[in-house]
Length: 442
Image 1 (tube, rainbow, N blue to C red):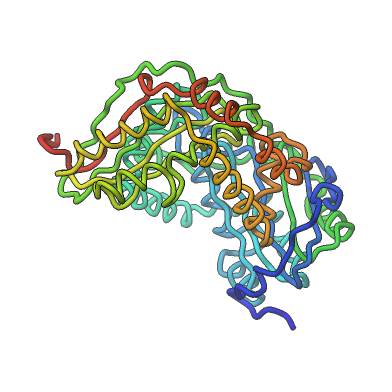
Image 2: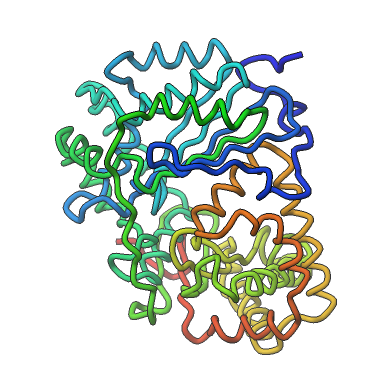
């Protein structure tokens, strides 16, 4: 029996799809210049599509930092063949979905459908990427929407902390360095439809595009369909490799005052100069999990549970799929507990950095890493995401099959060595965003 339309039930998505080996079962081909992986799994009827194209926010020119976001926003506003209402109807009638978004390095493609509707969905993705209508009326609406979204985001302490953090630790020109909110709002206001069309013409195309299709699929049929819908498409370009983030030359402690907030968001950390595929990355991630992953991490056990200073605190390594990334501690404190919370966090950070993690913590977090990774592969979406991440990290598909063994092979010396080698608390940046005690807003 097919899963009903619109929202596919959890039962359909949680069917077992894990292989003993992913790489031997994945069909990887270059189709009209697009790097395509089709993977048939044990799930019935459901198909998930994930893709990227090198047209992320960092491709926007300096004179208008909003062009990548606006170009992506126009993809679902109609094509030269049908308007947005026709697109919505054809997808809604079969319970399928297609979404586009941008992050620092890529345009992201996310879609879901039933097996029978895969040809239609692939054709529509191609149509939206290749021939957006670029309606002046829809563009005006999109500009207002994007400006409104940013103004609302400016009221979120976590968003403000993150923007200040990545601007502090990444140099100008690094893809992970975001535009300031003021820059983005000004760029949206002055952007023209002609500029968005020119951006699309320059950066959209099969070059450096990746597409992963997972679920109840036949690779041969996928190849045939993609060969038809993307035939004759040209253009696009791989993003040039950026220089790695260097030493911090900004203030090591920055305050972002926001009036009338009940909490202060903090981010504390530094750039790692590591990309995901680099040798020390997994070791650093396991060590970081011991410090601040979930309720068993040191930060939660001490700063939250023992001292009662916060509802939530964590540490993680990220932003390292396409480029070198960063390490951070994130937390929220009430203004009156901010000083104590930062002091408590610092004690845990310094002890962890100086002494490392224990053998017991290593064993425990190895098991959690392996378990979480396998669980993530147990849905079509999780599997598609893992395959796409592997491609974007320039790693072989065999990495997915070898992940558990790589984690289990990590030694205590490797993990604690990676912590000391790539992190230095004395060089970390501390961002505080919210209603700060004693501060006055401008």
